[in-house]
Image (cartoon, rainbow, N blue to C red; front, top):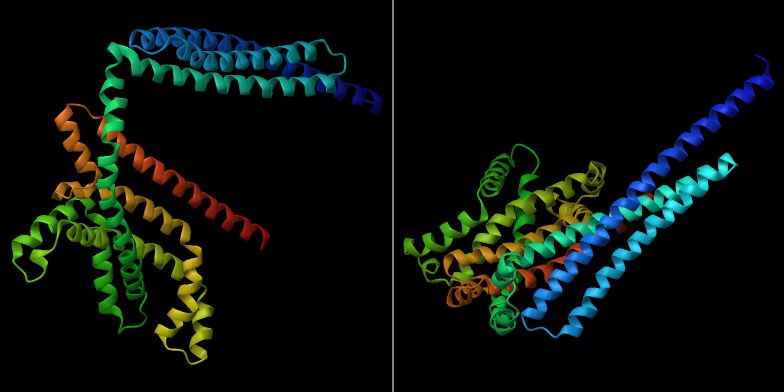
Length: 368
């Protein structure tokens, strides 16, 4: 085969592949249009049904109708995305330029996937909305009684101060105690073996014990020992001790990972300058290690903050225990929902802050 004939055959093959891909894009866009149309119908039916229910429950008609227009308009916008994708696909099929057809088909594919993803999101929201209103809105009445949430919010927030106190004191103690354990686990030589062994046993023991069991054993066990001072502590103090022991084991491993990530040449250089092991750790190793473990330390803090709710098991009147009292008095769990909302509102900004720290660390590594 001569060169012009070979090039012509390659060009025909490329055109056939391009046309095949355009046909695939066309089927995809028609599927997206069908899914988005069904989504619009589902959203409209959901809005109408929930709107009627809200009006029957005593809501004013005009705010309900205005609120219902928003999801309907957004779902119609998704249908418009699919229609735009279909238009681009048809234009790609009719184009005589194979490269233009491929470009139009790629745009149609992107638009159709966008429409499909939004449709799936709307369908999930519709399912959740139906779940909230089925059986005479049993779920909404049980978990989201707005009157009870507003009435109990001040009491629950006041009790939440106990959670904040336990978290703040525990976090400070954990950061210090975990560093001591981590340094103990990294002691060098034969002389440090007994201390290393004890530190390993402690870490394995309290990482293996669920936090709720540790809190229970300390909260109810120490008062029964009749030991001086320990038997007369408050339930908050017992909770702080239990959480410090539990999270100290986890955090010590984070510290140890940071310490071991520092290159051994740093230790050798510091020791060659005459620094003792502990001065080397204090001035050279630990400052470098801490900078690299701030994100996992923050994650541990988020977990600790949530686990302060476990102190309810030993009778501490925290937000969760207070909400249970309100729930038992009203035969409704909306007060517990209030506690859940408080924890979520506090935790999400911290999680985003951790993500920002991780991204900043990645940027530094890429640029460095």
